[in-house]
Amino acid sequence: MIYQLPDDAGAAKFIMPRSLPRDAVRKYFNCQAKRELQGSRELAAIGLQVPRTFGWGMTPSPAARYESVLFMQMLPSFVSGLDFIRTETNIERRQRFLQRLARQLARLHGNGYVHRDCHFANICLVDDDTLIWIDNDIRKPVRRAERAKGLSKALALLKSTARSDLSDHEWKSFTQWVRNALADWPVGEHLINEVF
Ligand SMILES: Nc1ncnc2c1ncn2[C@@H]1O[C@H](COP(=O)(O)OP(=O)(O)O)[C@@H](O)[C@H]1O
Ligand SMILES: [Mg+2]
Picture 1 (cartoon, rainbow, N blue to C red):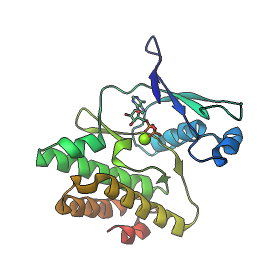
Picture 2 (cartoon, protein in one colour):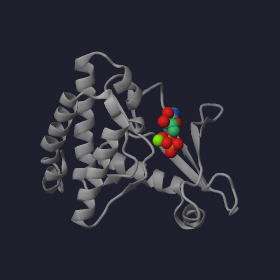
Picture 3 (cartoon, rainbow, N blue to C red):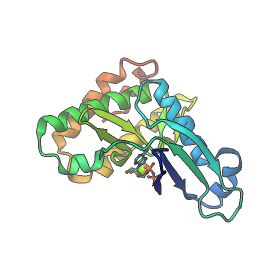
Picture 4 (tube, helix red, strand yellow):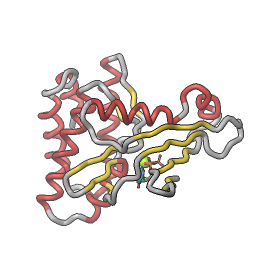
């Protein structure tokens, strides 16, 4: 649930526990808002665009409806990546979006990260050309096999959320762009075979 704060003070994202009892316990040492704030800053550090984050809070009551709250920049008007692939009919604009996303996905994974909810609705498109990553609960697995699994899961999630909104040709081009771009990054090379 996103609320716009008065006086241009940004947005507050109230976060419900996703899995109980896990989140009711985990919130005391690593709540989701804290993870998202850190994740956003780490993604910004590798050159991806994210909403600016200002702080987070956690609800101490064990029975609280929300586990935590994240304070961040309210994004200017944007189109969700999912709406974009569902409604955009211009082939070149679709291609540009997918190419950008492929490069950024390769940058993320090629720097060792995994976005835990990597689907089209968590990519916001501003001004046609800028992608902004949201919902940034990320991990940086130490083990190579975990990184590989992270990338195949991200691709599977992207594909399943796109359902029939991407043609086979578009998906093929997308995965080829991801493969090409992975080669540019420190841990990208060994992930190339995970992309299909
Ligand atoms: N900083 C923001 N500014 C404006 N809208 C946002 C912002 N962050 C998220 N949203 C909107 O709220 C929706 C839910 O946010 P998200 O972080 O994806 O939470 P959830 O965990 O519920 O998916 C997004 O799909 C997007 O439309
Ligand atoms: Mg989301």
